[in-house]
Each structure stands twice: as structure tokens, then as C-alpha cells.
Image (cartoon, rainbow, N blue to C red; front, side, top):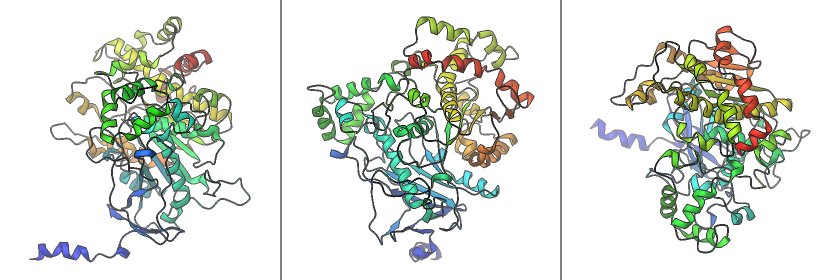
Length: 554
């Protein structure tokens, strides 16, 4: 009898017992809580993007003044396979904060841009839920709050054509991210975030309509993989000419990408238009876009899926990419960096030791314009003998040496040297820039269960530690034996992520036997050996030279 009464008792829980936040428009959001973290889920920041709004810049969503909003459901993800809970009405965000946070708490705000190659992922990915990060920040005495968002993916978010460029509708997914950041500026103070009204004597900060927003000094955007690329794109957005919505950025395992100026996305775009029968006149025409907008979500998503080849080597790496549209991205990223057209922020960027070992099928795709001579020069910087000594000091080869060579080259091209290029531009403009090298992983048992041996510290290795979610990898039938060093690194890395910028300079090796500060030319001897052996200065000098940057098409 008592058990049957419990649901009835739950019905009498009042709104006042829930975590709440009331904005300046008297809109009250009611959330929930779990394990000492309060959450507000599925908050709309933009209208439905289906039908005639498909591909277009997002339209700001505003709740009616005086509304009560029960933010306890995550809502759908943006269209992607295979996910049953998807919709084009997906532009929502989540807010997480420590228990007991009030509107006067003024906590630093971390805004996360998820990864997934711009075709997958959402704000609700279990691996990147921020509860562990928040609790570690509280224990460390430097509490933070966290915001995560959905943004449009694939053809829905990164469609390209002359017609879309003319109506300023390219880079829709990046525009979604920026609108969510505007929501943070306007509303996060009510949730306890430190985004105070701008100083009247300082430079005005406003949205696209000139409305004043907030002070971004305590807002940090961070992202991993394509989310890290998104961080780079937001730093370069509008050439830094519009209002600044954040003060710090953390780009994990990517900050830029080859091929942005090569318009690689035109290839899958052509396949989508042809596959749906919409390309009756010209891919670039307004008629083609009108036809694509009339398709159902499922029809368009199916055409996007069919545009991919049967194996990774059939595709040009990440195919749905940002594009130089003359508006959101006014020029090639390399040109914006060289001419100082970006938001002046402090930046942390980094990579995993073996970030690209799983992506060697894309090797030639990441060298789209390389001449044979420069390819030979590149290979000369990566002698197999050095890599054998670095990967297999005991002489036991777990992977073919050429695979390791290709993996290190792709890593430096995609994850290391482009971040160094962006960082150098920011540093030249007087900003603080920091780098890290992730040298520890707990993914080895999972990889080996799939027959992938000797891959090292692979892509995404840092996420378990940053978000404090080691248990995410506890899968049935897979060995799960986190070590004492895994738990120790979880505590340190999640605690330090929001305060990493306190490091003086240089590269920090995270995890593993060589952990510690290691500048390019000085630092902890063991850590210095770990970095110097990668020849980052020499290799990035080649990869970031003007001729080679042009041949990388960014």
C-alpha cells in the first residue's frame, strides 16, 4: 500500500521545491537535481528550423514574459542517424550548476560545443555530461556552471550553394552556436552565472540588432573534435567585428580544418541534390534549395546518409564543413589569422598523443593540394626510425610502422599545427595562449575488444577525465579496470580545465609517466623529452608555412 502511494506523493511536489531561475522578463525556469547538481534541460533558444526555415539562420525564441517553464525534459536531438528522438525543432540548451546556486552566485560559465564530425552528437551525449566536472570544481573551491547546446548538423546545418550564400544562409550550424551564446549573455546571470551587465564606460556589447548583452569576461567556450573546430570558427566569426560573446576558448583535438577553402562540401551537396531529384536546373540555383526545403526531414536525412561512401577512404575526411561565405566567415581562416581579424581571447588548445591513429584512411584527403615535392618534404620530417623508437622503445611492433607514421602526420596536420597556427596569431595580438598534450587514456581495453591493438592515446581520450565520467566506459563484456592513476587524473584534469589558463606558458603533458610542464625549449626534463621527441616546432614550422597552408586549403 505504501508503494502505491509514492507516485501520488510525488504529484504534490511544488514548483517552489525545484531549482528555479527567474529572468529579467519574469520568466521562471524550474529544473531538477541529481547528485548535488541542478539542471535545467531543453531550454529553447531558437524556433523550429523545418520547412521554409530550413538552412536559414536561426530565429531567436522568446518565452512569453511571466511564463513558468518546466525545464526537465531534454527534447530532441538535431537530425542525425541512427537516433529515434530527432527533430528539426531541436535548438535547445541545457544549464547545469552546483546545488544551492542563486542569481547572486556569479559563477564562471563554461559553454560546451559537442563534437561528432558535424554529422552526429548532441548536448545530451552521456560521455560529456558535466556533473563530474562541476562537482570537482566545487571540491577545488572554484565552482563553475555549465551550458551545452544542440546545433544543426550535416546538410541541415552546413548546406552550401550560391543561392544559400546570397541569402546569408550558409554556416547555419555555426550561427546556431552563436545564437545560443547570445542566450547565455542575456540570461545566464539569472541562473547564477557571471555575465554582468556591460560597463557603461566600456565598448558596447550587443546582439545583431544592437541590444546590449553582457560582459563575457567569465564565459569560456570549449569543444572537442568538430566542437574544437567550432571554437576556432567562433573565434574567427565575422572577423571579430561583431559583439564578443566569450572571453576564453578551449579547443580540444581540433581548432581549424583542411579543406574549408576547398569547398569539399559541394561534393556531398551535389549527391544530396541529385539523390532527391531536386537538381533539375543547377545545384547552385534557388530552385534547388526550394525543392530541398520541401522535402520531409526523413527524406533529406536519408539522402545525406546515401551521400557517404562505403568506407572512410571513399570520403574526403569530414565532408560537411564550414565555408567561407563572406559573412560569418568573411575570409579564409588562415587569412583572418594572419591579418589579426578575430576576437581577442585567451585560448587553450591541445591534442591527444595519438589523436589520429584511427583516421589514417583519410591521410591523402587531409593533404588535398599538396604537390609531390612537398609531400616528400613532409615525409622526410617523420623518419620511421624515430617513430619506431617513440612508439615501440622495446622493439615490439603492435602496429605497422607506416601506419604509425601516417597517424602522426595526420595528427600534426589536423590537431596540432593548425591549433599552433591559431594560437600564434592570438599570441601575436597580445593574448595568452596555452597548449596541452594528453598522454594518458583508459580506452585501451575497449579498443582491444574491437581488435584495435597498439593505437595509443587516441581521439576522445581526454573526455573521460575532463568530464569526470570514467564509468561511461563500463560496458558489458568489456574489461573495465580504471587504475589509481585514472582516478587521480580524473580529479586533476576536471578540476584544472576551468583554470588551465593560469599556467604561465608552453605545453603541459597531461597524464602518463611524463606528466608536467614542458615548453618547446624548456621545462620538466621528463615532460620536455615527451614533447621534444615530437619535433613540434620543426614540423609545425613546415606545415604552417604560407605555401603549405595554401595547399592545405584553409
